[in-house]
Length: 155
Length: 392
Image 1 (cartoon, chains in turn blue, cyan):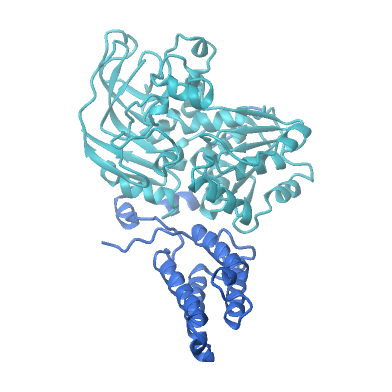
Image 2 (cartoon, each protein chain N blue to C red):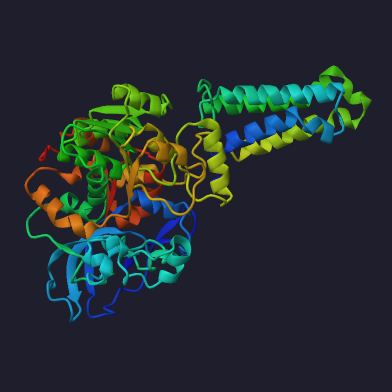
């Protein structure tokens, strides 16, 4: 059985903007890291996430420049980088609050990616090949080589 | 018999079900030779139309051969080839006498459900939820046709199924949308949506003598069909540039189209970022039934004093309806499910005369057993799919 990936590009975009906004605003306070280095890192991560979301080629993108699969790759790389940051800087030694939010956010992001359809189509589950084989028409020829099917009859 | 049944959101199955029987004197049983998947079937498929139940047989575009008639059906006999209009109309009530067949007052046994939602009941429709009567649909081998002495269009020549099948719905629907625009020659008409109904709205506007017909969609292959076969003069691909209103003004000398046809309906997918997000979230949480981008833009784009023709299907409620633009620009809105019976003979004559060949929209012709994959292919616009005809 195929692993279910019901999240399409639009729903993924909704999560992108919601999560990005939350990380930039309330999340550091809710996680108890407001005003700390960890809090600033989370805010920057949220801003970057929301930033490249606006540049993504999906329905919620503003400037449609980054292909959706590339956006997903950035998500994965960003999540891993965020999780690694406290250990690279050494701030993990200052207590769990300095690294647990980073790792938790990374796991959330990776879970979200696992159920996102990389083609952006979401719940698509059809066998196009079976339809193509059964089809008695040639769609491409019909669309591109077909002649005008109507003529004006009333003025 | 085999039939395509709804079995949950985004799922249909082809199953064995009991054969239909004559229940009333005015019934006929039709052996189906061709049936089609309609864009509005996707609203059921996607789960946006209430009162659909597991096991309901889908399909409201079908034709075939009469195999049995009730005692009250004198105009048809076994062996007749017929196209069946999607609205079920008694032919005797006030609405039918005024050619408002899609508003028949006698054909919807679940009128109380529709009255709760719409204030009044509408006609019964084949295979289109219990809100419209719970009638078994035509994506099957056989169908019971109520009021068969009123509805079926007898086909008495050797035109192919694909040439006449769409008299059941999408050709008259597109034509009604164009007729609403009061075309008398020389008008500029914009059509939102180049799906099957949009293609027929475009072709009908051409047929009626519009000078400029602008097709709007996000799929190039559909826009190509609109130009090559349906006769569109201009296209707008909103996937490349979402500023539809501005583009329509540019194409019409700054004034806007004389009339705009919404052939999209409740699942519009325009690229207006935040508004699309808002609608998508509200629709997903069932706090809004209709995503209205196309209708909003149609109202904003139409020239002052113009006509907005709505033939795309809406199901309940939408937010952010631009009442200010609608009122202050003095627009007229005309809408409705198509009164197929009103147009059938006239359009059949156009087909017979060679004025239009409706088979141009058929990109997929497959067996009934392929219906589940065909639904997905059609919904997700795969394989350059415009219209699927199923052969039971």
